[in-house]
Image: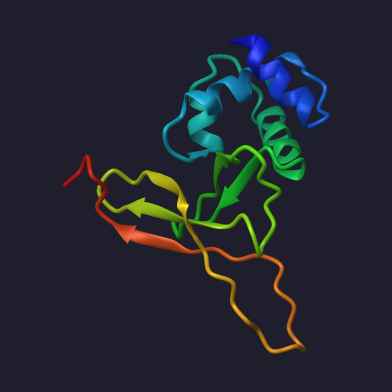
Length: 137
């Protein structure tokens, strides 16, 4: 699998360090968004600062996006192929389950463009639907 993760990193012009490869592999295995703490638990010996820097590097290079799901703990999820995290094109809805506390990306449900007054400029948007997910119903 490292060949695939290495290819993904190289496509984003990121040097495939061991930690980046391991973090990307862990994110690829996730079905839901993950927090830094959750990611840290999946590594037996890890440095929290290195994990945080890796996630921030991934975010700055469009490999992951951050999610504010209202829990007070930032979550991270892999971006879709071709995503540039463009506010007018790539933003999608997220769903937070109040029972299992997991946050899901719903990439097929796009956030509609909001026509703001001309003296306003949007920089980010976040739409989180909260409720009960399919496995908790």
